[in-house]
Amino acid sequence: MLGPAVTTRSNQLVPLDSNFASGGSLRQLFGLDNAALAACMLAAGEPAWRGCQMAEAMYRQRLTSLDEITTLPKALRQRLGAEGWQVGRPRILQVFKSTDGTERYLVQGQPMDPQTVETVWMPEGDGGEAGDSGDADAAEEGKSRTRATICVSSQVGCAVNCQFCLTAKLGLQRNLGAGEIAGQVVAVLDRHGVEVGRERVNLVFMGMGEPFLNYESFMAAVRLLVEEVGLSPQRMTVSTSGIVPGIERFAQEPPEVRPKLAISLNAPNNAIRSEVMPVNRKWPIEAVVDAVRQVRLRSRERITFEYVLLGGVTDRLEHAAEVARLVRRSGLPAKVNLIAWNPGPGIEYTMPSAGAVEAFRVALAAEGVPVYLRKPRGRDIFAACGQLKRTVEG
Ligand code: SF4
Image (cartoon, rainbow, N blue to C red; front, side, top):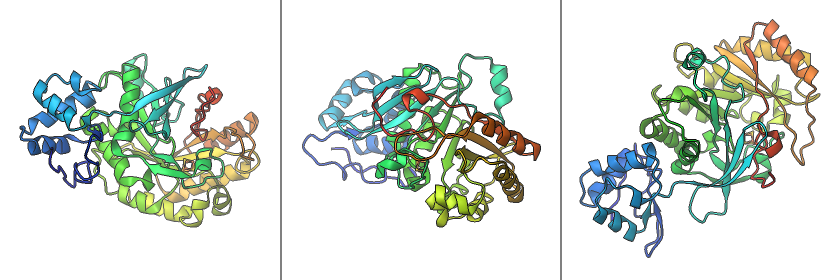
């Protein structure tokens, strides 16, 4: 048996042997970081560098079975297999393809788990990155997939209950582990043959769930993606509904592994926001902005305020003026991403008219606020913002 392999820094927060029943239960290696894999190998009487070989095989070469990891001696692979270990990378179970090239996946985080989560691949992104530092490099790269974006889930369902969001209808089913979060990304990179380091891919943690209510696993996944997979945190954005303790904790993360921050604002003032996002009753806009001020931004980095336009509710010109004042008062280097609300079954809101969206954008721009319109992607396959609910209709 492999002994306990725990470090506070590693992704395995419980002893490796303690969370699995003996007698043939499967044990997942995917999700363990280099340090945990090395400790695991040491406990098995192997040199620590065998852990590096495993990390290289799972995260860089994207191998999905122990048999394929031929850098490990066959006897060791067999021993691991006999003890129930497997790579156990999350699997794409179903693919829905949009006419616009977007793909939505149902991903199984753990073998045999019936609770899937959703991940979305947008080959051209959705404009959410527009105006961020680094966009200029993308144009210079001149590569075919300079703007691909993967939207990643952090929980099965969500407890935050934003009134415009389909995921909220599921309630919170469970948190995802670090391997289940990072595994969505690696599975999608693999599916599209993306060469990390040569092709630019953006990650947005804006799928199902509130990342800051699953903080440990979310940040452990980010560290895996940065340190083991080789992705840049500056091409990652995490969006929060405004969980103040989470933002304060996030502010302490070192810049080498800290993604960019987006606040899901969605209303011009506390009265409307508390209706649309009940979480605002606990942490109103001012408290959220105060917490965001604690984040030490990199040079040219900006905070993004995401703003879903709900027809007749948050899309009026006077709302745009309020948002402009709010952004100015915050004193933060910031931009606003506008998203026209995507309809979903059982949600009473209406889409804003194209005219209202454009008028809102123009009004913010006229107030000197950097503003970008996120393009709806994959509406026909329920992949657009706020539409993720494990729907199986294609
Ligand atoms: S918008 Fe995000 S935080 Fe709000 S309910 Fe949906 S998944 Fe949760």
